[in-house]
Image (cartoon, rainbow, N blue to C red; front, side, top):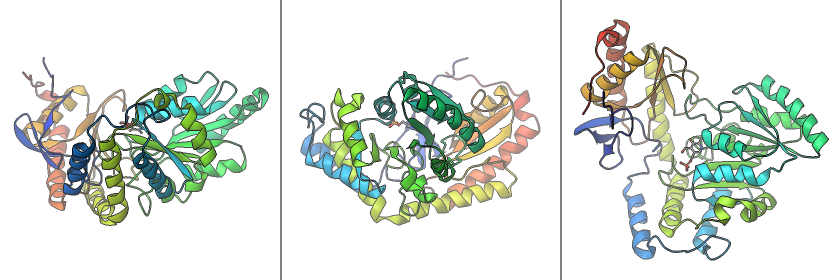
Length: 396
Ligand SMILES: Cc1ncc(COP(=O)(O)O)c(C=O)c1O
């Protein structure tokens, strides 16, 4: 059986939009974290193109600290810091390696880390670099966090170290929010710093789009706010923001930035353009939420289980094993021309099939309607054993 480029490494072709091409056919695409629809917006494409014409990919050469700094990098950092209500900010070349390196830089062997069990792989890899102790708390379980903080606090005090708590703003699989407000409340009992990875919350959550801390009214309690540009900004790069003294320390200690070339100009200028649009066009976030609300309430009305999402990330939980999952995803992509991601065991429990839908501002209410009626048809087939009895298709 050769499933190359179907389940794994599929190729979505054409400009990034709700309608793209997959295996020669047009598909309605619900898999891209292009939340605000910026990816293919003419102003964005124009800014990317112009910056590439003006600067190319080379400038500036070298790491920021040495020869790779420009006034554009600094202005962008200033604007980002202001937007997420922090004193200062540091640009990172990539989210994954950036947050790993931030974790590595801010803790020493005497410090103790307490983190959410469902933290993203980049956080887990950051923890792997930590030579001191770490404790995991059950996902979003505040009693479990408090229990681990008691243990961690005792150890840190014995060692003469500090405590760092790490969680996410929006969890990218379930769509649930980290309980940031409750975590920050625990600062009354324990002395710790809080690092939040808000990859899915930046641009989508909060009144101005400043993220999940703004949404929950606790941005002040987040000591280090991190986001990638790979989702609502539809680009590459990332940033971390916080108090000036901490960011100054990071600028001299984040190894993935000190020993690597800085972001090239098309990314700095292109990302600045995206931030400016995010700030000046609140209708982008409003459009996103119109689609999110229509999709989520429509699915719920038809009896679908969408878990505990509180964000645009929309999981649809169905019952079935791997064979049913394979047949269903073939049917939805090839016959109903809808492309969404599918998640199976071990990410979800055995016999659960999770279809993960990412609505964006670029989708329409007609897209939502079409999708819900396709999902109804799929559910009937799933429940009546059509996918259990069919042979998994073979692909060339
Ligand atoms: C929660 C979270 N953090 C970090 C990253 C990594 O960011 P990047 O793609 O910029 O490396 C991702 C995925 O993109 C993510 O989902």
